[in-house]
Image 1 (cartoon, rainbow, N blue to C red):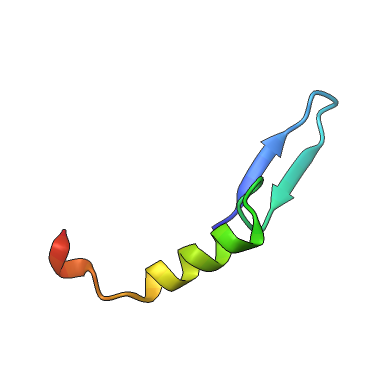
Image 2 (image 1 turned 180 degrees about the vertical axis):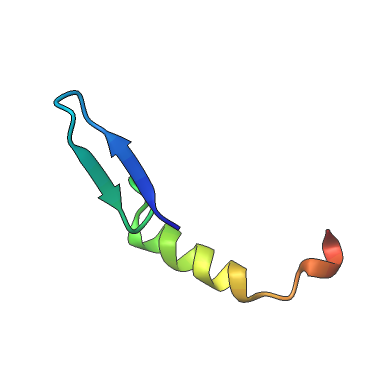
Length: 41
């Protein structure tokens, strides 16, 4: 997933990871994504 931000000066900033997330939050999201929870949906 990619986030893009349009700046006031017209330039575009591209994030490859979620902006503002700590390393612990990023690792937690990866681990949760590996869990077999589709049956809960």
